[in-house]
Image 1 (tube, rainbow, N blue to C red):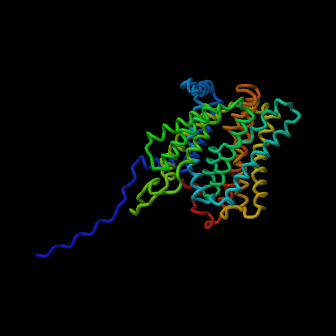
Image 2: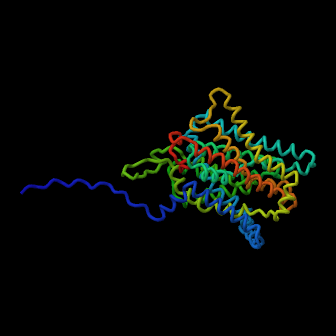
Image 3: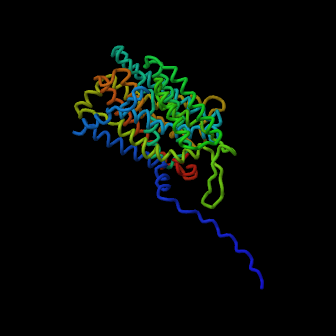
Length: 433
């Protein structure tokens, strides 16, 4: 009797992803998040200018949270400072990946979007000041309103209209917008804050350091890392600095290179094992929460601006403050970002990414004129929450942001249609982290 040869091992057949995994993958797409954000924005504007406006304002203004921890905040503030920190955490992960293992690891490439951000802050502030020179010192207090780019809205517009554009465009926008926001928050801390509480700020270094040490050792347990992240966020908030900065810092602390200790092994569709960095792993986990929940809820609670009908809109737009905001957001941002980029590329070794062209930068510079969150915050700090001038600021920011989105989105959409297929990178334009 002959012994039969052992049967060969059956080929690896990857299991079909479950419903939860498919939903997470769907929500992780920038296009999905962008569409959800734009829907939430339109819905907020409709509700804020409808008979349900009073209910909307009551919900947005409802306060809860522990007062002892300086966290007795309105629902709107929880969304802008809390939920948006999740989005900034994902942005921090992506930036860390790009600066360590991506295109921005070359300082000559990273210099360009950073310089563009500086130009995009200075020129709008100068334009607003020039327009309001004759309006008195009170009007000039809002000089920093058009300085900031709302990164969530800007990324959403690029994701929706720029699907055929190179992924480098999104990286350029992320870098520019984060630096822009850091500069704007620094301006708030220096010019619009009575004082920074340094004790909570120093205490925030403790959970941040613990978080950084643990992730470098490969710790991924949510019940360890999330409490540290929340503690860091709460302490930064108590210091008087915009708490979303904590999200960026936490993301940057995550290792972007897979090592024996800090890395995650995944099996691809063919059954081969791949070692991924923790930035990739955390982005996969948190991108669906950011795109599918945090950003749309933030948009709904932040974008509800009451314009007061056509008469109210006309009256607000006749104010020099509103005119300054609109012109600075639309013209100032585009001129500052494009002009700074052109100047910097004249320096030795500084160049535009090979997959990008100058029309891409021009379109992106207009998209960066979407102000919203930080712009509205500066308006409240400059003129007082609920004041007549604050209402003018809201209309100016809304109109300026809308014009910037339409102009920039149109340029990028036309550019995407004309882009040759071989120059589209991976063709996605919205690659996941």
